[in-house]
Length: 494
Image (cartoon, rainbow, N blue to C red):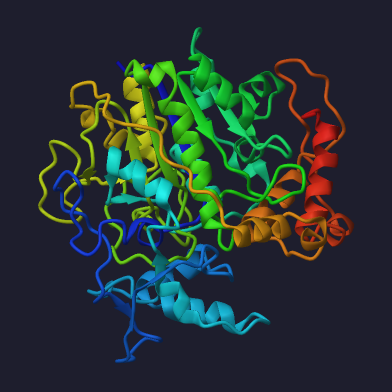
């Protein structure tokens, strides 16, 4: 019986980018299931109308792509449809604009790189922990991000089944993300337990983004990630746990492990392995009480060859540019439980009629909410999670013991030196912020006000950053870390 659901959500990688080659060349899982991974005949043209073909490739460059791809809604339209806005009707062939869009991104930068690297997916050696976990449990080759866009809207969907009509990270103002989350709902029931584990060198993104988590009474549910290891070991995992990776490299906490391009994917893979090993070694998992979901919030502009479904259930909140009827790009998702079939692949929800795309509702991030709701008896937060398939139907195997912790490959001397350089103060002093880091700084600028009286209902007051504040906003990772720490002190996070 599932008594604890644990979710690790990483950053900005597509399914193909992380898992595309793990079962190559036959694309058959250890269980004998068909796997919709990469094949060498997949390609993108360099620009719309071109007859030239740039085929998919494999890479051992753990920082590929080293220039952050486009991930905002408008860029995703180009990646999927080769134009923004999408043509009407939609073209018969989709996912042909990744190379074209990345070429446009690079053309606006100061560094001249080969845009064809966007077609390269990681060799399984780079993601060995993730591959080993998939081989022991179940991987979904048809799990879509909830919105064809960035981190904030997709993380809002996993927390609240809506992005409140927002389609990009901005507006960075948490007041514009003022919707009830599953954490708010759980807190209304006596005896319910939840925690968000985060990189406590800084502040939790889940708290920062979702305004209805700002009351001080909720802060006790946010724990540094080091508490996760002890909670798993001691059998103290809550009913629902959500894990954030580290979004910033810093000298105190180590290199970023979120997988956000161009952060080191090998280090991110080791973090996934560390979380997995802690969970499966704990008494709750071994008793069959824990369901672990490993996923990524969005594809981050990385190539994927599977067209998103167009039958998403709309939320009440919409946007003039988008009605939320399309899912986002496919992302890697692995379900870990002693009750799932070893080495399996799942896609069509159990009981659904597989008549092709749009004849059933596929898995997306609100499937996590649906699973929490069906397991613990909560009502849906929006029409999207009401329509989502949950994961409990996958738990059909007899209680298994044929699993083991994954081996953590030792980083090479070169990789150790690179990681040390990545988190050195001298590097961070000149490293520009990526889109997610910009959003964290900008979001925190709205709530980093004077300390509040710390009653349970007390909420940090919102402020409107003025032009002077915007002009002095951190521009580098090093400046941002120092600035966030200062704001965290003001708010009372340390």
